Length: 222
Length: 246
Ligand code: FES
Image (cartoon, rainbow over all chains, first blue to last red):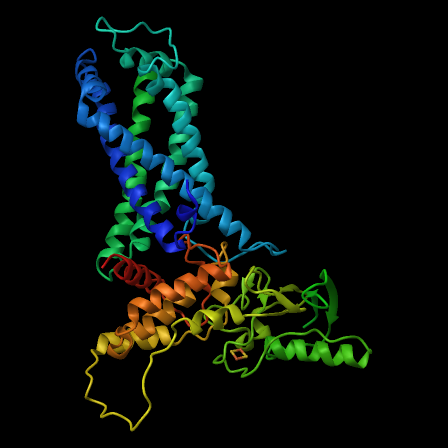
């Protein structure tokens, strides 16, 4: 990170933050699509095919790098912006602010921290296995590919893990709840007619996507 | 009304301040908030104590000089009013009222409840104007302005620069103020000519002054005594992107 990156104007940083955020939301949709294959009663055929495709396709591999870059920059920018925000009010108020604000909009850094925690745990549980950086006692498939279906089954068979997973996904939902509409506002995409729709869709997205993720551990638990 | 006031007292910008408690009796609910402080100050002067310093000028809600963070809200518990337009009927008998100055790095406390808001002036100096040669007044219909833009521009121009947006924002961001200025000029044909330069320079100065970043909590909009809309912030972002990219 060079100094010119830090010296981007506040709005430039926020625009990148919004663009990367929207890109990461798109990734959430793709990932959920793969996860939902687990619900098919086909002995994991679809899921394994999807995991194989994601693990071997070259375009996906390039995309993975972009995705990691997206995560890292979104997180770094979030931290840089937040630090500046804290420094902008060195003396706090005695009485906590009572101004009405949209639900959880003030707590993005904290809900973001929950998402980051989830991301790290998730990488250790799944993604790093692919590179052999983390070992698992679930044996690999015949073609040496990690058995992600087996790993999923193993993890979600533990109720404590599933509950923890669901709690973190709810945190993701809280983050998305404010993020979707805010990204459009930051990009200047505000319109008398469309903004209410964007806000409504943002709420829908923040509920449906986490619900989709939560269904998986529930499916394995029940 | 009987009231207990907890007021921030600070000798000057270098001193450490503290809260001081004051009691007031027989305050009429019809008093304005600043009149209530006048009564307190008269009482303090009679007792040979130093009065509380606070900013005020027009007392009509038009100059933006009054400030005060009252019980956790800039300009107090009423919506869409300045402190000078706030009345004591908004409080109850026996209430404890905590009064603090605006808190933001670019708004240092000068004395007690008075803060230095010249950071706003510096931002205005960067582009909150249009450059014209003075002369005879032009024919009014020579430059046509759409009704919609005229209205939006006038709405943005209602900003009195009081700083409540900064005071309310958890990040002490000045985006609502700057965006109101960028919008009110940028929406009119005369202001379009310098629009790109204006937004870049005003945003740069806003950052230099040390205001925080907007995180879209819209606390600014909720506390603005002139009901400046958040859509001005979106417009400024749009203007900024166009100025940088195109
Ligand atoms: S004193 Fe002028 S707006 Fe309050």
